Structure formats: C-alpha cells, structure tokens
Length: 592
Ligand SMILES: [Zn+2]
Image 1 (cartoon, rainbow, N blue to C red):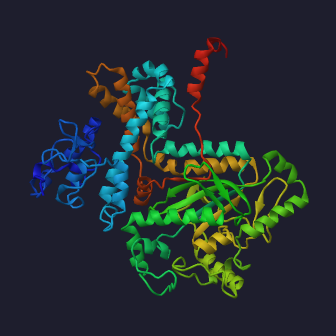
Image 2: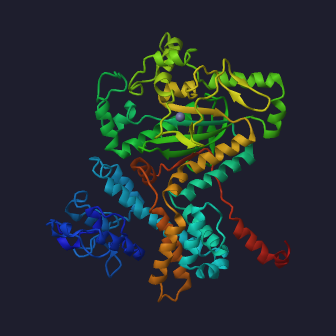
Image 3: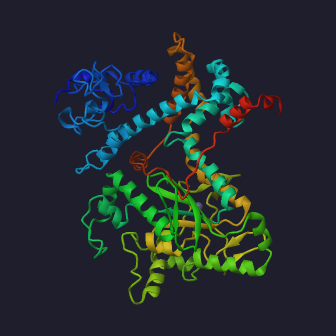
C-alpha cells in the first residue's frame, strides 16, 4: 500500500464532494475544515486529512500517458478507496492497453463478483457526483456556444450578487423574478441542467414529451402507478444473492422479513436491478409494447388493456428510498378530446367505457364494506410469493381469492400526518383525496367524470392482472378529458422536483455562489471562460441540494435511467432555428 498519511483525500474521511478540478468547491472545503473541532484535531488518526483539493480527472505523465498519480497525487478513487482498489491498483482512468471510459468502468465495478463496489455507498455516490459534474461541464460548454446565450452575455455579466439576493426575496414570496438579467441567467442554468442526469430540469422535459405524443396520437387514456416491493419479492432477493429456488418456491423457506430488508438495504444495485426488471416486464409482457433501445421501432401485441399505442413512464424514489413507477398510457384508437366529448353524450359509448372500467380498474374487495374489510385478516409479506400459475386447474377461483388477499394487504389507504394529511383552513385533508367516492357500479357520466365500484372509501384502485403479476401496492386512473391530461402531466413531471424546491431557496444559493465567482474570476480576462464557469458553478450549486436514494443513483450509473419511453423524441432547438431564419432572411428581424 503506497498511501502516506498526508495525501489521503478528504473523501475517505466522509467529507464528500470536494471536487478538486472545480476550484469553486473551496468554500465547501473551508467550511468543512472550520467544522473540525480541536478535539477532532487532537485525535490520532492513522490516516490524516490532507489540505489539498483532490483532482477528479485522470492523472497524466509529461508524455501524456495516463498514470495512477503515484503517492503524492493519487487518482481520486485509488486514493479514497484503498479497500476497494487493493494495493492502489486497478482504478478508473489509469493507463490501460485499451482506454475504458469512466462510466463504463463504473458499470463494470458495480457488477463485480464480490459486490464490494455496489455495497460501498460512499463509492456509489462519489462516482455519481463526478459524472454529474462532468455532464454539467459539457453542457455549459454547449450552452455558451448558442446564439441565444451570446446575445445575453452582457446582461448576464452585469449581474451582481445583490440582484440575486433580491430574487431570493421574490422566490420566498413566490412571485416571478422582476429582474430580466436574473430571468436570463436562470433560463441558461435551466438549459444547462436539462442535459444532466438526475436534475429537476431534466425531469421536467418529460412534460414536453407528453404533450408531443398527445399532439401526435391524441390524448392519453390511463395513468398508472406501480410500487413494487423490493424487500418482499423473492426475485429481488435472488438478485441480492439469496439462495431461493424460484421454480419450487415456498414462502416459509428462505430469508425472513428482517433478513430480506437488510439484504435490499445493503445492496442498492439489487434493488435497482429488480425494479427495472419488473417494470420492463410489466411494459413488455402485460402492456404488450416493446421499444427498441434507441426507440427506432416499437413492437406491439395485444396486452391487458387491449392494443396500446405508447407510454411514457417516470421512475421516482419515495421517502425511504424505494423506487416506484408512474406511467401514462395511450391506447390505440382512443378518440380525440373533442370527439370524446361528443361520444360521452351517447349512452352506448358510456356503457362501453363502463365495461372497460369493470374489466381493468377494480376498487372493490368481494363487495365488502368498510367494517367487513377491517374485519378481514391483513396478511403479512404478501409480496413474498409467486403469481398463481395460469396452467393450474382451478386458476380463475384461485386467482380471484389471491387478488382479494393481496388487495386487502396492499390497497387499503390509511391517512397519516407523515404520508398524506395536510392542514387546509384548519382542517386535516388527505392530499390523495381519500375517502374516495363510493359507488355500487362502474360508471362514467356525460361530462367525463367516472368511478369504479367501491364500497369502502379508503381503497385505492388496482389493475387485476398487474396485481396478480407484481403483487404490490398500485393505483390506476382513467383519463377521460383534457383537464385531467393537464393535471396528470403536471403531477407526473413536477412530483419529484417539488421536494427539492421546498428544501432551499435556489436564488439565495446562487447569490452566494455569484459573490464567490466574482472573487475567483477577478483577474480573468477571458469572458467566454468566465461565463462557462459561472453556468457550471451555478448548475453544480443547485445539484448539491438534491437528495437521492442509493437505488436511484445506481439506476443512473447503470444507464437504467429515470424514465421509460416507448418512442424516441428528437428535440427541436427553436432558438437556433429562428436565428438561422433571421440571418438568412434579414427582413424577418423587422417583422413582429
Ligand atoms: Zn390519506
């Protein structure tokens, strides 16, 4: 082991994210050091803090060849993770006969046989931070080359920290920014971050995809949420290394509930892999839509909802880090909004829709009311099971019985202050709108409002085949009018980002960052470079406020991503198109 005490980077001692190439992290370093109490200093660590920044880029020799950096300047991962890269060898971006990219090497590490990389959360978050910052750097480089940015360059340069402090006040009061220069900077930060994995801005562009598909093939028909149980499903346990015979599965055998939870909590790779495997199965086998990797073609067969034209799904993490899935689905042949309005006036059509609801959306457990449902036994660990085999003789009766047990265990909503209750005008209201409307039958009204048979107001609706196959909590809604499409689209892509927004006032963070940027760049003459750094620094400042769970981070690192799309979308950069048109036809500049 070549590491000497003085050169071990800060990351190894838990002070994460002090990227050395990005000198703007100096403030993070100084506050980290300020937090080191004298008592800490007196402690005799075998490995002591260094006082230099750790460069996250590859080390190169004078001849331009990659090296591991040696003891005085070790490659950031070799230096920080001596237990993962034993003897300080085998790290990322060191000299190799064939160059391997940072991302590819991380993917290899996460799949390494002894699981040491994927089980080290410091490693997982560290490499994610590096890759995210590199994407920000590339994206800022592209952004400053855009004519739109060049036009606004002077305005952005004129910005002072006080302008952003004022913007912070406006943000606090939830009113639009009054300063055009602030609006301009925010627009370019947004565009920079939109190309970076895991940012709110990248998530928000799902919204335009929903509208694009709606314009292309008509309004969507269904909104579904699936919440697979990674701690319950035996498939997840097998992926985490448990010895379970899935062909001759017995729920009494294998790890108990505590061991199952520990296995998944300790192995975010298994949790992410399981989630994406199950959701891909739902999309391909149950929905009947298989999209090729690049979206160049879509293969379809009739699925549980009939023929599906398209879907757009978003992966999200909930409070405890487990992943869940929201999907908007377009059914083939569904009418346009205006045609739908006309058709809903006809009884025959409404009857047809009610039949569709009866077949696909269930919120009734064997006709039981609230008292009867509460009296039913709530089985534990229902997801630690196998779906009923459709080849068995009394399949239908068995499946129906199993569905009731599963629904009782997973679909009964309980309002709690932690999960769903919020105070509105001094009254606690469930933000999921429970209790839901009761009904003796499945119905749709001429105005598009609809409901499924429900005799207890706290039952979430489910799709019977998805319940059979995935055996987990879920929700399903019919989208029957334009207003619902709008609501669902907004909720869909804004859901994750709102948590981040509530944590901090982004303008206040940017004000601090701008003050520091001005100080750092006071001798810099190169305007382009200054502006690129500004965008990069602002974008990184906002990234630091985001909260991720480990399975989410593994999803990004492995390329599983945070969305599932049946179609491939080509972005149109309108600003560039308008600029080219104006340059080609100068007369357009004078026309409004
Ligand atoms: Zn509730």
